[in-house]
Structure formats: structure tokens, C-alpha cells
Image (cartoon, rainbow, N blue to C red):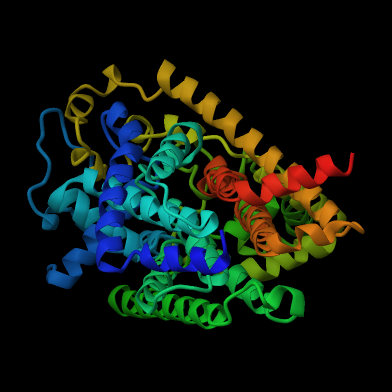
Length: 534
């Protein structure tokens, strides 16, 4: 098939042409419903413990926008879970009122996306939580369709449906697309950026739509915004060498820059407005302190520094405490009898955040080799952490372990009323979840290992003396390397700066088998090339 014919077919199947739009809309809805099957079988969307905070923050923002009572500020930690038989609140303004004297709201809100908080609250409380799943699965379906259109050069509806069904049940996509958390938007940003960079033939409307998706995704979490910066840097770097410049779209850096800058501006406006409202600047918890403490250098430096001078750091208040992990230092108070950041007085919270940079630099300077070793270990562990084990940390887990947060979100969870009435009768763990987690982990890990092997072989043959025969597929080789760099960057950002959690890498791992399907033709050419050399 000639390149001209491929271009004509892609243009005819443009998502925003009249006929193409109808075909794409119908196929998107079908695929979105298929992608919702895991949540439908579960009886409710999948939850994670942080969703309760997103819901509460969304409620607070909504109240302030429509005019909540003056002189008080709703706090996500205020209130108690609904009693047995208590119905869901009828209005957003029913949350208990409390001041932010302990700095809880400003700390929690600083690490939670206002965009996702509003979406989660409005859809869940005002309409249906199922719409949150449908929105996310529909976006995923549309992006996958456009990716396959581009990489295959033609529309194959039955293949698209088969690919999405496979990704739904055999990769982490089926879990993350139905998870009431913004992690899936890391994948949305990544696929959108890949299309913007490598698909040269694209309508203006679709270009704007993908740019808007990148901007919206970057608003969902700091780590996703950082991935946007990674794609921006790559899009600029690809325009420098002559061999790669011909394979990428020159408009891509401008689109990515505009999306990232706009998302950063929106977050700044939100932070400015929240500070005016609360009198406290929004700041994320001291994740970097927790990280170097858990890695070892922070703990060693803290004990030595505080032994010499008890006033060396405000953090000396936590010296000598043996924390199980970084999460216990930040969030564990209330679950254990150990002192923790989140339950500390507001002035101590501020002091810890102000000295975070100094303490982290001092700790790394004191034990550089140990920190490098720990960071590399975290990065490698994060790279291969591709399971969906958080499936057991859903609504029931929140109900049993996080009753300190007002679990108003649980009252809106479909089919969850019996658990609210009798919490001890419910459990999140079951045979299906365990089996599905094992299946997904095995499939994701196999896809990742296979992808790395194919990419290494492809690159080796390409630079070999006879590699010119593969030159026609260099765009797709560059795209595969972009996905590899994306996974490495995500492992570094999340594993080194935050902590090793399966959902961080699993939120992107579904792109790997999608890439393998989309690159079937160049991979087939690679196979033929390898056989011809035997």
C-alpha cells in the first residue's frame, strides 16, 4: 500500500470528518462499555484510599463557588462515617464545618488535583459514579482507536474491539480506566503526545483536541505534569538531528509547550485563590523528606544531626522513631501510635515544609553513595512494578481503615449501602480479584520483557551494516524508543521522588502491548530481516 493511499485513508477516517466522526463515536462507545466490564463485574467502580480526599476537596471547592457559609472552612478530616442505614447526603453543603487551624486542608489540597476533585465530586454526588468510569473508558477508547488508525494506516473495527478487549482483561487498563483516581490520565497524556509528535497528517480540530487532552491530563497530578515536560523535551530533541527530524511533526513542541504552560498557570491560579481563601499556601506533604528517610540517608543524617544539636531541624521531633515506610511517616499517624506529619500541629507542618530542601540536600551530601544506590534500586523496582494489587484497597478497605476521613464518597458508591450498614460483612479481597491481579501482572510483565527484547533487537539490526533495509520503519522505531524512555522517566519520577507503588507504573504499562499491536508491520519486517541473515 502506497504512502499516498495510507494518507488518503487516514484523512477519510479522520475522527472529525462527518462520516469518520459517526464511525468513531459508535466504535468509541462500544469499546468504552467493553472496558467497563471489570467494574460492572465488581459491582462498583474501583476505589483507592485517596479518592475520599479528592471527593471531599471537590465538595469544598463546590461549596465555596456556590457560596458556603462565611467564617468557616470545611475540612476533609472533619465528620464521621454515615451510620447504619443513613442515606447519602442530598446536597453538597451538608459537610461538617471546621477551621483549617491544623493546616490539614492546605496540605491535602496541595497534593490533590482540583480538576479531578471537581470532576469526581460532581459526577459522583450529582449524577452517578458510573459516569466517571464511562468518561475515562471513553477517552481511553478514543485514544486507542486513533493510535491504531495511525500505526496500522487503516481502520479495522473488529481488530480495534479485539485489542481493547484484550487490554481490558489482560493488562492494567481495565482496572485503571475504572479506578476513581487520576492515574489513568498519565496514559492519556502519553498517547496524546505520541500522536502529536509522530502523526504528521492531522486536522486542526484533532490537534487542538489532543493538545487539550494533554493540558487536562497534566492538571490531574504533579507526576503527570512532569511527564508532559519529558515529552516536551523529547519533541524538541527530535528536531535537532536530521535523521529524526523528518519523522516528527514540527508543530508538536509548540502544542506541548502551550498545554504544559496552561496547566501550570491553572494550578497557580488555584493555589493563589486557595491561599486567599484559607490564609495558608497550598503545599504538598514533604514527600522528599519521607523518601530520603525511607531510603536510609535521611534517617542516619537526622539521628546524627539531632544528637549534636536537638534544634538542628524541626524534623528532630521525629528522630528515633522507626517508621515502616515513607507512607507511615506522612499518613500513618492515626493508624499507629507513632508521631506523623499529617497529625502534627500547623506550625510544625510549616516548619517541615520550609526545611525540606535543606534537609534533603544535607542528607544526600552526607551519604551520597547510599542515596544513589537506594534511588537506583527504587527506580528498577518501580520499572517492573506493573500489577494491580491495589484492587484490594478499594471502598471496603477505606471503610475499615480510614474512618477518620469522612467517607462521604462511599455513600455515593453504587451498591455499597449494605457494606455501610454492616461493615464487618464486607471484604475487598476475593478469588476473582486475586486471580485477575495474577493474570494481569503476568501478562504485563511478559509484554514489558518482550517489548524490551524486540526494541533491543530492532535497534541492533538497524545499526548493523545491513540495517538500511529497515530504514523505512525508523519513525516507528523512534516511537518505540519514546515509549521506552517514557517508562524509564515514569519509574524515575515516581520511584525515586515519591515511592514504589504498582499503580504508578501500571497506569502506563498498557501502552506497551498497544504499541506491539500497532507496530505489527515493522516488527514483521524485523522478523523477516533477521531470518534473511541466517
